[in-house]
Image (cartoon, rainbow, N blue to C red; front, top):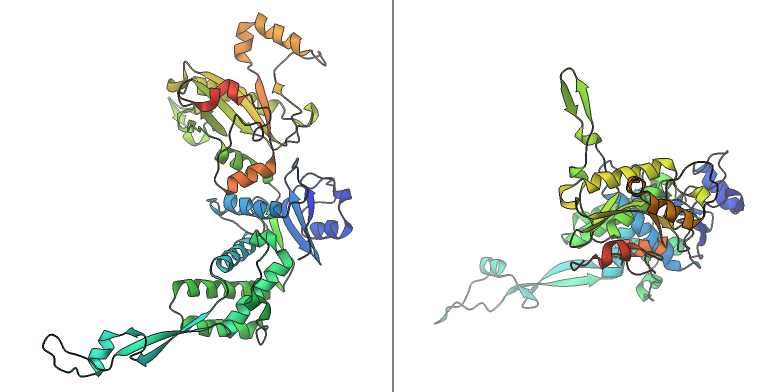
Length: 442
């Protein structure tokens, strides 16, 4: 395949090549008035494959970056209870195409190309079929047990060059040629069968008819599963007219939050304990539990003496101007009060945290202050906080952290947990100060 071109979510639309820009506009990935891209994923057009990585990613075009991005997208969206519809911008675009190709690729990497297994009945050659032997042959009497001179047996014959194998090889070659490591995750090892098997005969309809016949005579669960995948691939290809691929999401902030939540250690489920609203109806207040407070992520050390309320924010956060605003800050302050009010956390320290994408730490802390001060020295804020204990309690600082998106994606795909004390995971992390290495000795 041609090497993918790498771009970034939130990059300038005007900086994209004309072919990519036109293809994205035709598929509704941005409107006329938009200036920046809101998209993470893959798009192919003509002979070009473009991969859009998360904002603030640091990548030199590693060929595995696109593979892990697609793996992360599939994992995040596949279990969503709302269901997944292709083309719905709130969900994963192209999920069926992605899932289908990944399943075909994984089967090939595990089992190789399809081989037809055909059982032949034989006499005295192969595995004995005692039921058939007893029904068809008369034994010779013996002192210990009857003796059968002829045994009904069976042997498996393996046919490596059949029409189904050719269809399978053709599909693997197509996927590899178009998307390569994006789907397979690696460069395919040399396979003489894959290279030498001729193209299947007939058109797509003829191939589907053949696969139906093959399916009716197949009893191996693995072969049945593969043939059904091949059928679905051909059916989708016929339905779409072999159109180019579009797999991704315009709502990567949801994925960012989900990955951070999945990869942080020491998570505590507190949502069921947080306050909920009540509305007065007549003489009774009616509880609305499903509209109660819900934090993004709450973590604590093993001793539960130190807690952290974490909000994963998919902001640029390269300066104060593109950082979270009042709404997000106030929400964190309310979460702090709610968590501090829990029975198990009443005597514990609760800290607040934002995690942004990137490895360059531009912002370190957010605080609440009075208007018309402009730029304020850090030492002034510190003195003000020391002089007003009550104000300090009311408006706690929110500590800012940065996590490199592509590292997070790999950890998420591999079900690993971030090390909060490792600055390669969470840059310049003060979690060590606030959670004291998550150990029971704190």
